[in-house]
Amino acid sequence: MSRILLILCFYVLLCSVGSVTAEEDVDTELSLEKCIEIVLAESSELAMARSDLESKEAVLKSTKKDLYPTLSAQYSYLHQPDEIYTPADLFTYGVTVVQPIYKGKSLVTAVKQSELSLESAKFNVEAVTNNLVFEVYSRYFELLRVQKLEEEARQSVLRLESHRKDAKAFFDAGLIPKNDLLQSEVELAQGEQNLVDAENATSMARAQLNVLMERPVRAYLRVRESDQYTLHDLSWDNIIEDARQNRAEIAQADKSVKIAENDIIIKKAPYLPSVTLSASFDRVGDEVGGAPSPGTPSDVKTFKAIATWKLWTWLKDRDEVTAAEKNLQYAKKAVSKTVNAVTLDVRNSFLKVEQAAKRIKVSEKAIEHAKENYRINQAQYQAQLATSTDVLDAQTLLTQAMTNYYDALYGYQLALAAVDKSKGVFGQRYTK
Image 1: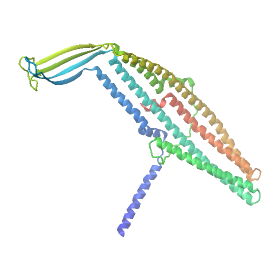
Image 2 (image 1 turned 90 degrees about the horizontal axis):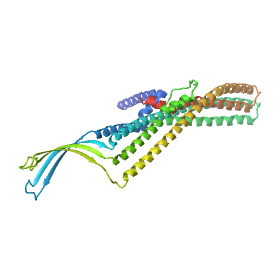
Image 3 (image 1 turned 45 degrees about the vertical axis):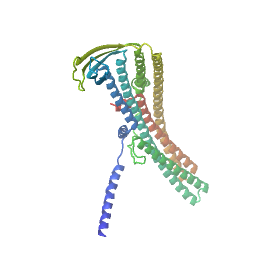
Image 4 (image 1 turned 60 degrees about the horizontal axis):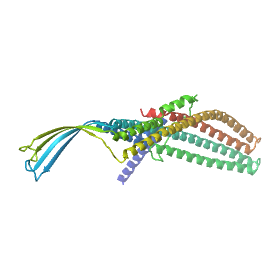
């Protein structure tokens, strides 16, 4: 019996230690920068982009080695049953060095292609990073926004409960009709429903940020508040210039044009001759080890300069050149399309900053008026100088004013982040 009690005490002790650890985890507060750090470390999309970059680096190294000479070894056996003057069986082994000299510019151009592909892969990592960081901003500020709205919904329920108590007291005293009491109870029920919706929105926003950070969807998450803001005076000309110079997508499109131009050179290479140099050393004998046989040279050294030129391929090369030229036209059009998309992205974020800044100023004034309006109507109701409808309308206006304020506040911060994203700031900052 004592042994069972000892085991139970030990189990309780373990549970208490576990609960302390869990409580410490609950108290952990994540900042925006910490969320970004986690996402960049765990993102499968970014990992794929980095793997592609490493692949392009390996391809570049491989392509450069096509310019170097190659060394090969060979061993052969030759049987000549009708040969009279030389041995019927000959064994040959040797080495050969081949150095490519010219292949219609295809060798050097292939290296340039690999360099361009590597640069394009780097810009792809930058673009993926830029979009990922902005997505963290979006989900982070969305969580902060819905948390504030949940808090406001809870305050709204408290105000409605207070009003219902006043209405119940007046009804019991015979000062108001029953429909006034019922109206307050209906509004309270609606407020409680709004609170349930707000709590669900918070849970969903928390789940979305958890998923982005590759955490369990139901993991507890507490983020650091960021309700301080500074209004910025932005210049459209500076923003669009920075975007066109620094946005990774535009740089990628430009690289695609250069890759398409080089591809035409490679496709035209078969029109020109290719030249290679080779040197070989062979040892010939009538034994397996290549020992010299009587009357035959034991060592054979050769040096060759070979020029080859394809004269007819059924116009296959011409068709490939035509396809490459069409790809170049496509790439040039894609640059224009990308620039236009980036310009619209910049314009959209710029206008949202202006819109949110104006909404903050307006909503701050509206909150002051709404609070005062609610206070006056509530006081007048308690003095039986206002109706229940007046108080409930004032409560609705106050809730709407607070909602508009938080929408504008976090909308402004997100709009500023969208401007940085449209300029490619996040991609450059977090890929260095």
